[in-house]
Length: 139
Image (cartoon, rainbow, N blue to C red; front, side, top):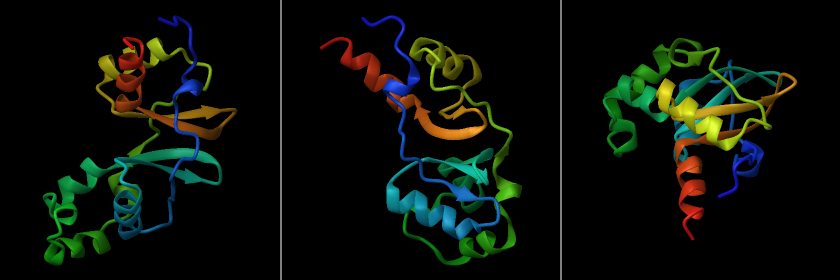
């Protein structure tokens, strides 16, 4: 097993993001279109929050992802991204060791971490990325 591999080896580099001024409909659209679960919220190039499919599901009882739009869509018009996102999310640098990232996921119970270098978003890593990496070590 490679012991000191940096997170940059497994992170997603082309990150789907939303701007803090976008609306929640745009978040839902991007989650569905890209089949992802987490979207960093940016101001310029700085990560100011993160919003997840789970955050949206809590608002809409999951109906938006089960094809039952309707009444729940009104909620998307009533709230802003800033009201729903996790503000000031924990971030890691691209040189953070994969094992250290895994420990953060276990201790903090996060499912995604934005990767930030010098205040700029460089990628995102998820629990799925970590699990895939560890599974590859058994091949």
